[in-house]
Amino acid sequence: MNHAEIARRFNRSVGARHGAVLVGGAAEPLYVPATAARPAQIRYTKDYAQSALHELAHWCIAGAARRALPDYGYWYQPPPRDPAARAEFLAVESRVQGLERLFARAAAVRFHVSLDDPGSEPGDFANRVVAAGADWLANGLPVRTREVLRALSPDWEARVATLHG
Image 1 (cartoon, rainbow, N blue to C red):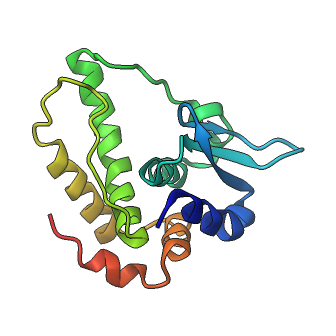
Image 2 (image 1 turned 120 degrees about the vertical axis):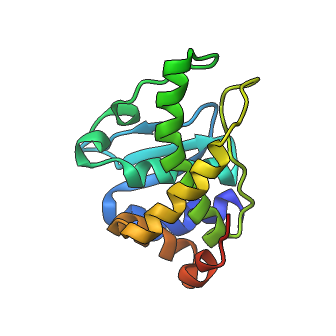
């Protein structure tokens, strides 16, 4: 599935129900909260399917208070990061990418773990991403996450069930 189809499926169903629109073509990903005049915008990088799925994962994880803030109120420290900042970033990112991996499987999009830290060693990050995805499945997926998965593929449960480490 390409980025346009991902956006179309999200926008016509989940996005329409939740007042959000997935928009490609951005130089950098960005979440813009809704206003009285327009829905929230989930902007993904250029026209990359994986970027669209990654930004949807952030949107699914963000609670209502975070969805009221630009970029969910998160800070972004570009690389290189010191060890403490890198550890904090990777702890959050493993959960996001774990969910993104599930979305990628449902959408039949190739998934690549992204460290977003050129030159750093991946270490066990890929394993942490796989474990996070398994944890999402084992402990139950939030409602919006299930809605996104269903929008991506009616048979998402069968597709995701075939995921292995």
